[in-house]
Length: 268
Image (cartoon, rainbow, N blue to C red; front, side):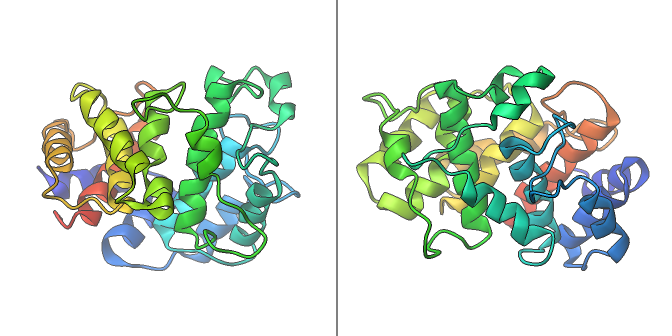
């Protein structure tokens, strides 16, 4: 790996938010006020964020931008608190989430289309993970989405729809019913059986972020394999490949995600 080259890539190609995320992840530097002012421009009056669908706040984009605040190590405050409340207020009675109906008017990608069970399952896992990261797992008035997730998995432990839903759900399953439970071990075995080393660096980095929050150590065989594959995927310019296709904006985010995974597993 060439960590300095990756850092240089982000500092040259990244915007002020991305540079601040890097500085917080690697060196615990607090974000400048200009960064928070930039981020608040993505927030709607209801507390939610818009990014992939710019016209309206929505569940997916709110979790996506909250990940940036996680990188910045900003877990409370006048921007973050309403965003988390936006998610909490939109949890359904069955414990899961769905995308807001308003996005349908703006031709969203398939994985953001509301009403589909595939959308609901992966978004529920996504919301659960970020809310755990932000300390809301045991907040009074919230309830656990595990039952919803487990009601939508097959006999192998794989959640319906996108494979990533199963590994995004690992931190939730580790929290409840616990890392020694049958659902957790079934999900982990399913992930291992379907592991694809040919996926993009950003995909592997996101998977590792979920692994570490599920309590899997770097010497776990699947984690060790994934870390090794991630390291090999660094490109000659220092970056990692994004899932969204080529483009410096996506490549910078993918590179931050790779460095996050490596840092959290104490490899840098």
